[in-house]
Amino acid sequence: MYTPVQDGIAKTAHAIRYAEVAPPDNLSGLVHCFWELRTLAVLQDDFHYHALPDACVNVLLNQVDTNVAGITALHTTSTTLNLGTSFHYVGIQLFPGVWQGNQQEVVDSYVGTPYRGTLPLIRTSERLIGLAFEEKVPVLSELVEWCIAHGQIVPNDVTARILVHLDQIGSVADMAALVGMSARHLQRTLKRTTGFSPHDLLKVLRVQQSFRRHYLDLYADQSHFIHEFRKATGYTPVRYRDQFRV
Image (cartoon, rainbow, N blue to C red; front, top):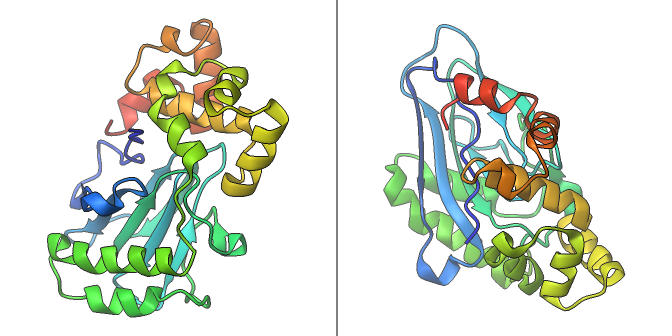
């Protein structure tokens, strides 16, 4: 199954803990992981978190201020988030295509304001206070199950097939053939369920794959790889690996 890489944490960063845990089996086709990002001490300088496009949607809960929560996703380019000198977030990373809640709630930037939507995000965040990360998993799972019951999270057979057979896809035509759709039908389906065109989705997934596969398996040549990687991440591959934990 598709395994997005961890977002960029500078190699020079200290007193910052990132952890993730797999969901229970009944949610494994919908949730990639539950995660936690927090400081272990107050930092001397603001921490800048380099978020990478991965086509996933994240449910984000702020454990310092439980009124702050949101649904986040990036499109085809990275963004840098200033998280300050002290923070504690937990979240749910959903596989591409399974979030079918209010698309107007999904943001691609820093979440720093109180949540005003109808999802039980604040109530869930309050229940998590004081729990060790592993103890938070059943509570986060309950939130996912609530979203399933209310039609916010829905299995997506099309994106699931694409992700399972990603190594076999070299073009949008391959993607359409794999799921048994015309290119036009695939365009409409992916745009409706993911917000991506097939071409943009493939670009994002290829960059993600490039962290674990040789670039010549994915791109015509080194120049093409560097160009696409820099467009998505803001860095050349060499500079990215030099600067961030990978």
